[in-house]
Image (cartoon, rainbow, N blue to C red; front, side, top):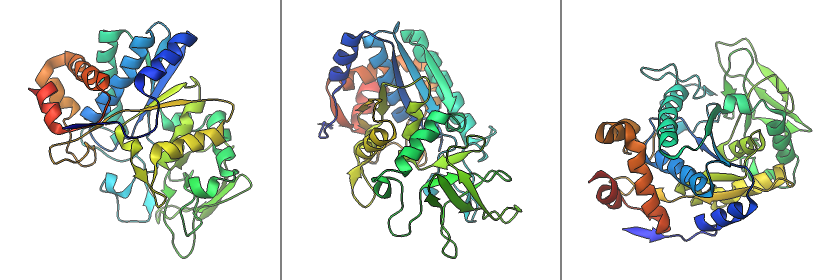
Length: 337
């Protein structure tokens, strides 16, 4: 079964008409958490962005994919070392690759190449490890941290921890937990933290948010600040899980992201489109970390090098019917049969 949209965001056609009328160059962005192999849900989001660019006009549109290799991982995303510090996707080993992020970026590069051959929509692939060093990203981050809404958007309820994690310049890890009452603290542009890597000589250290000579990791909600960095984004396409409740407030993730961006850059409007959620066999959403999705490699084996054409045809059918939830039975009937 499939269900109609139930959340209050612009429909696909609303955004199409808005930007067709403008007639200006358009950057459409989306992101990828490299927590496992790329699957149909990720490719579906890519196809949604590509179809938007295609219908508005590939001569004026560009896709911008950011691989979130320094985003703070969720514990459940990977089997990490049983210590209190975090390695990020760019440093986590992955069989056959240098890192999780290398695997995801290579798989998405292949998919974007295939989409480009079909639709001739130009694209750019970049990494959050590069983007977060841009002054525009840091300025937007500071605006959010200094705002009256910061306690709601970027602080962990109850312990005062700010969910921005400077990487230790000595060992490249960051600290996400609370040990002996210590947490990441923010005050007047400075984040104070510790390095809990027992193999590192560094203990406590502080980082100026605007200092782009060092790296930081951020909570996924804050990763949206990448849209402030050239090429500046007008539309961001998210997967269906961003319409789901988040945190203790149970506010949809997309609503929090919209508030983050309004505070970070109030003069730079940004539209969002949340696509349908694609479900796996067990009525669970497809997830890289759960290994329950139809993978990039499975689709290539099934359809050959033009697999993205099949995904694109499937996406167009679902999109035109304005579904928000797509059961696996629909995937089997319309794509895998």
